[in-house]
Image (cartoon, rainbow, N blue to C red; front, top):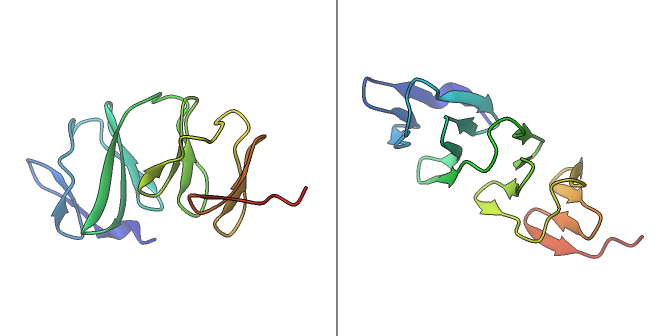
Length: 116
């Protein structure tokens, strides 16, 4: 993911020329791999037509993992989706688009058989 595709003017930040509708320009921070945050929201941009904005669950505990995965102490994210069944306390990235927590294994945002 190329994070050099962000731009800014006095009103907003843009990803590939698409406005992100940032809620707080002063606290906006590009995190990498398409992720950014401000004091109120997380932003994930995959393309100029696919940008999601999530209410901030916990700013301080936000952790960018790999391959589109991220988490905070309340939720786990995969690109444009909140993984509602995922346990953020035990969730970890395994390999390319694969992750697991104490309950499930994931391929992208789908639950798969863990073969434990």
